[in-house]
Every structure is written in structure tokens, then in C-alpha cells.
Amino acid sequence: MKGILGELRQALLFLTVLPLPASAGSAQQLGRSMAYFPLVGLGLGLLLAGAHQVLLIFFPPSVGALLVLLLLIYATGALHLDGVADTADGMYGIRDRASRLRIMKDSRVGAMGVVALLCLFLLKVMTLSVIPSAMRWQVLIALPVVGRWMMVALAVLAPYARSEGGTGSVFVEGVGRRELVLATLILAAVLLGFFRLWGLTLLAALCLAVFLLERYFKARLGGVTGDILGAVCEWSEAVFLLLCSSAYFHR
Image (cartoon, rainbow, N blue to C red):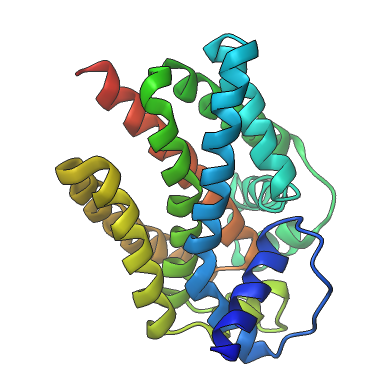
């Protein structure tokens, strides 16, 4: 039990801005903490759903959608947005693997990074805004769970791309099948609990997406990095919102 609580604590420290006492976990513990990434996502989702219900008392639904997404950025410390920008800068228009990895490691944000961040945020706000307010709470709870499961699954399937290591290498090299199984059980419980049969379709689509992304990044970079995992988290959330908005629109 102590080990599980330690791993959960590491996941909370990494994924949120909760003011927990700092703790230097071992590389193995950090990798094993990925099992609880979707559980932390569930906590974030409950926070978003609760805040959204309060926001609807004071603001119209579209403004509530904007504010609740800003809350998600704040609660996570904008952790994965840096990965969105770096991945866009490195992957767009660059042909060789070494140059892609070098550009992605550069802390400066280029033009493609800015464009990617703007497109991501606009897509999230617009798709969440068109989902009926009465049904939005389910989507908000599932949203961070989906993004964080994608990180776990891709980290398990793909090797780490940098030979010299990096922040993401601790997670990618320390995560394994145990973490993927636990993370998938949490994801499946959320999707099937809220969306029933459609949740099963979503689960299958996510598994296919992870398989395709693993093939893509392995071909282009030789694996994944921390930036790529962050970008995949954010863009999978955006695509999830896009699918939900389409499903509710055609009801």
C-alpha cells in the first residue's frame, strides 16, 4: 500500500500544481507512477465538471467552456503545452531525425509552435462549446482521463528517441505492462460508465490511435520524447472533444 501511495503521489506531483511536499522518487517509481496518470486525470475531470456547474450560474455556456479549459491549464501548470509547441516546431518541415530532436529540445517557441497552440486551444473551446451544457459534465470528467491514458500507452509501446536521455526517458524506460493494464482499466471504467456502447467504440479508437502514433513517431524519430507525450495528451483531448461534439450534434 505504501508503494502504491508513493506512486500516486509522484503522479500528482508531476501532473498537477498541487502543493505537495517535493519528493525525489526513484526512476522505477516515476515510471510505475504512470499507472495512476488516468486516475489523476479523473480527479482533474471531477474538478472541471464541478467548476463548470458553478460557472454556468454566472456565465453563458460558451464562456463557461472557455473558463473551464483555462482552469485545466492552470491546474496542470500548462505542463503539456510546451510539448505541443516543441513538437510542432520540430516535426514540421524538418527532414532528418537529428535536426528534429535538436529543434524540439530548443526552449524557444517558433512560428509553428505558436500556430499549433492557437489551433489547439481554439479547437478545444469551440468543440466543448457546442456540446449541450446538460451533457458537458460527462465529457469534462472523461477528457483528462483520455489524454493521460494516451501518454501511458504510447510510453509503453514506443522506445525513447534520445540516446542521451531526458526528462521523458525516466517515464518511458520505467513504465511497463502493469502500468498499461491498470491505466486501461481506469480508462475503460470511465468511458463505459459514462458513454456505454459508444464508450467501447471510443476505447477501440484510442487503441488504434496509439498503434498508429507509435508507428509514426518510430519511423520519424526512432521513438518518443517527453515533448511528444505531452503533445499527444493535448491533441488527443482535442480530438476527443471533436468526436463528442460530432456525436451530440447528430443525436
